[in-house]
Length: 423
Image (cartoon, rainbow, N blue to C red; front, side):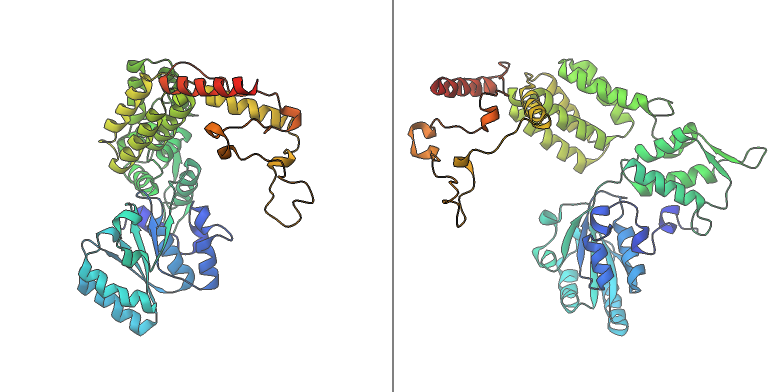
């Protein structure tokens, strides 16, 4: 049976890895380990299909070590013993252990001395938080690296490479794929390159060539192959961003039903990372200090949705949207920081007052640093009047409280009290 496209397109060297530049880019930690030939066991943590196996394969290809793949849940201790025997003969083996969080104690006890000796270089792959789900004994012998979901551009690059590669990919097929089909394949799989590649392969191999021998891949075909509908058939994806904008504006306007509608459209398109990012922005930009606990609940709901995945993720997402919609609204934090940034960017900054400057070094006293600073905790109510802003800005006011929620009302009373004391 032919292996799937995602399997065939696995990188054979570290410079072929798509994305994860914070780990495999020039000068970054995994690249440095490979270049120096100083590999150590590691745990790669992140969502499915974003390159954990690819990085392990690339490390093995770049270092010429033997490479074996096992699953901690389904493979046995005997399978580990076979890898250990091979390691004794060849010197070192890179073992990719998928679902490493499911490694039971007998397998773990067998593996530990081989990790200690360096005969087996473990690359554990997991979608679970390793600090919670993996035993301390394994964690202490491995570095933990978090992988990030791939960007749309990363996935588009991989799709193009797969269509052009004649040895491992689909380069022997004459394919014309529309821009909107590529965009949908890249966006709706939520950064999961494996799903995108396998969807592309199904589309190519299940579509008959036209009279000119060309396989025409359209948005309709891609939607059918990955079973995800696009929001609309627009080439540039503008409508996608229109829906995101409409979601935020509906929540800002406290319209629960409209907000749930636009959330539903994004859920139907499978855009969990986009939804998560947008809801966190809304929580702090539009609700803000009027109801800070709603922002905390939103972050919790997003973590739950990311752990659950679709379809169950719809439940915490809907809960967060309803909560945000019906919360009091305040954008005072956004207005305040934008006002401060405007002054800074227009050149209104000035020197930090001498009494606020760092005085924890030899010679600071001679420079007059920190000499007249008043320590607020030494005064009643932990407050004393002194200048904090630079001279050029000492009368500037950035924060203007909104009185839409109890929490910011309390902040406003404290703010007014401090301002009255200054006067």
